[in-house]
Length: 78
Image (tube, rainbow, N blue to C red; front, top):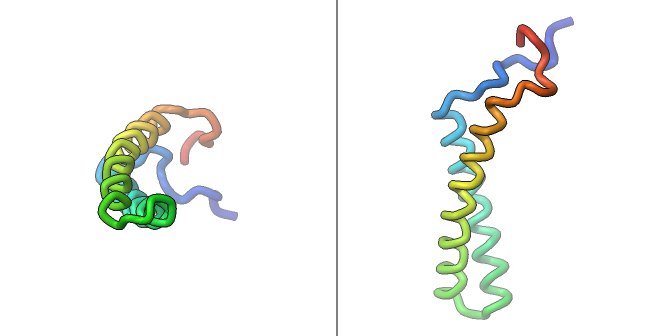
């Protein structure tokens, strides 16, 4: 039987950036919709969504890159 993990545990930076941007696009949409329901104004909701997600994008990227250096739970030779 083959290995359960078919890729290296260390992501290329381009992959981490692509994952980050795709994930954040979904999160911006959710944040804007929730903010719109709460504040009742589309302009303010978009501002809330953009500002919070710029901060979260940087945080997620740093978190992803940090985990690339953690070997805990990664089988050797994978």
